Length: 106
Image (cartoon, rainbow, N blue to C red; front, top):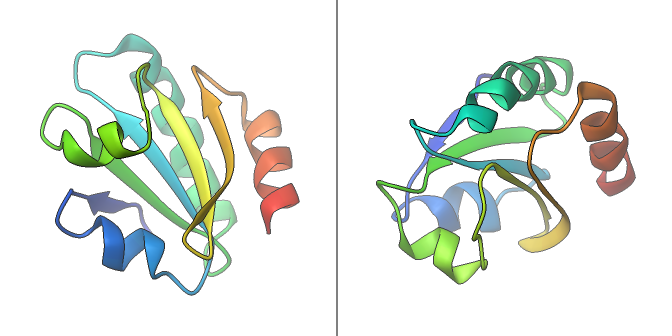
Protein backbone atom coordinates (compact mmCIF):
# COMPACT_ATOMS: atom_id res chain seq x y z
CA UNK A 1 0.00 0.00 0.00
CA UNK A 2 1.35 3.39 -0.94
CA UNK A 3 1.29 6.41 1.31
CA UNK A 4 -2.05 8.19 1.69
CA UNK A 5 -2.25 11.96 1.29
CA UNK A 6 -4.01 13.24 4.41
CA UNK A 7 -5.94 16.48 4.80
CA UNK A 8 -7.93 18.15 7.57
CA UNK A 9 -11.02 16.87 5.74
CA UNK A 10 -10.11 13.15 5.43
CA UNK A 11 -8.06 12.76 8.66
CA UNK A 12 -10.96 11.35 10.68
CA UNK A 13 -11.96 8.71 8.12
CA UNK A 14 -8.41 7.76 7.05
CA UNK A 15 -6.71 7.81 10.47
CA UNK A 16 -9.07 7.88 13.43
CA UNK A 17 -11.53 5.36 11.95
CA UNK A 18 -8.84 3.10 10.40
CA UNK A 19 -9.12 -0.62 11.21
CA UNK A 20 -5.30 -0.91 11.23
CA UNK A 21 -2.69 1.33 12.92
CA UNK A 22 -1.66 4.46 11.01
CA UNK A 23 1.71 6.21 10.87
CA UNK A 24 1.14 9.91 10.17
CA UNK A 25 4.01 12.05 8.88
CA UNK A 26 3.44 15.77 9.57
CA UNK A 27 5.68 17.57 7.06
CA UNK A 28 6.20 20.65 4.85
CA UNK A 29 7.84 21.19 1.45
CA UNK A 30 10.51 23.58 2.81
CA UNK A 31 11.57 21.32 5.71
CA UNK A 32 15.00 19.69 5.22
CA UNK A 33 14.63 16.99 7.91
CA UNK A 34 11.19 16.17 6.42
CA UNK A 35 12.83 15.46 3.08
CA UNK A 36 15.44 13.30 4.85
CA UNK A 37 12.81 11.18 6.63
CA UNK A 38 10.56 10.82 3.54
CA UNK A 39 12.46 7.84 2.01
CA UNK A 40 12.48 6.12 5.42
CA UNK A 41 8.71 6.58 5.71
CA UNK A 42 8.32 5.26 2.15
CA UNK A 43 10.30 2.10 3.05
CA UNK A 44 8.15 1.62 6.15
CA UNK A 45 4.99 1.90 4.01
CA UNK A 46 6.25 -0.93 1.78
CA UNK A 47 7.59 -3.10 4.61
CA UNK A 48 4.38 -2.92 6.65
CA UNK A 49 1.92 -3.09 3.75
CA UNK A 50 -1.39 -4.53 4.96
CA UNK A 51 -0.44 -4.17 8.65
CA UNK A 52 0.05 -0.40 8.81
CA UNK A 53 -1.40 2.52 6.89
CA UNK A 54 1.06 5.35 6.23
CA UNK A 55 -0.15 8.89 5.60
CA UNK A 56 1.46 12.26 5.06
CA UNK A 57 -0.14 15.58 5.96
CA UNK A 58 1.32 18.87 4.75
CA UNK A 59 1.15 21.29 7.69
CA UNK A 60 1.22 24.35 5.41
CA UNK A 61 -1.92 23.23 3.56
CA UNK A 62 -3.71 21.74 6.58
CA UNK A 63 -3.46 23.67 9.84
CA UNK A 64 -6.34 22.27 11.90
CA UNK A 65 -5.07 18.72 12.40
CA UNK A 66 -1.47 19.61 13.41
CA UNK A 67 -2.89 22.20 15.83
CA UNK A 68 -5.29 19.63 17.28
CA UNK A 69 -2.40 17.26 18.04
CA UNK A 70 0.01 19.93 19.30
CA UNK A 71 2.46 19.56 16.42
CA UNK A 72 4.96 22.39 16.82
CA UNK A 73 8.05 20.99 15.11
CA UNK A 74 8.31 18.99 11.93
CA UNK A 75 8.80 16.32 10.95
CA UNK A 76 6.52 14.86 13.62
CA UNK A 77 5.63 11.19 13.23
CA UNK A 78 2.63 9.89 15.17
CA UNK A 79 1.41 6.30 15.30
CA UNK A 80 -2.35 6.10 15.80
CA UNK A 81 -4.02 2.87 16.91
CA UNK A 82 -7.77 2.65 17.39
CA UNK A 83 -8.05 6.40 16.90
CA UNK A 84 -5.64 7.13 19.76
CA UNK A 85 -1.99 8.19 19.79
CA UNK A 86 0.13 5.09 20.43
CA UNK A 87 3.49 6.81 19.95
CA UNK A 88 4.95 10.13 18.83
CA UNK A 89 8.39 11.17 17.57
CA UNK A 90 9.80 14.53 16.52
CA UNK A 91 12.67 15.01 14.08
CA UNK A 92 14.50 12.66 11.78
CA UNK A 93 14.20 8.98 12.76
CA UNK A 94 16.30 6.10 11.49
CA UNK A 95 14.53 3.19 9.84
CA UNK A 96 15.47 0.85 12.72
CA UNK A 97 14.19 3.25 15.39
CA UNK A 98 10.97 3.84 13.48
CA UNK A 99 10.43 0.09 13.00
CA UNK A 100 10.92 -0.64 16.71
CA UNK A 101 8.44 2.09 17.65
CA UNK A 102 5.89 0.79 15.11
CA UNK A 103 6.42 -2.82 16.22
CA UNK A 104 5.64 -1.85 19.81
CA UNK A 105 2.34 -0.28 18.65
CA UNK A 106 1.20 -3.16 16.42
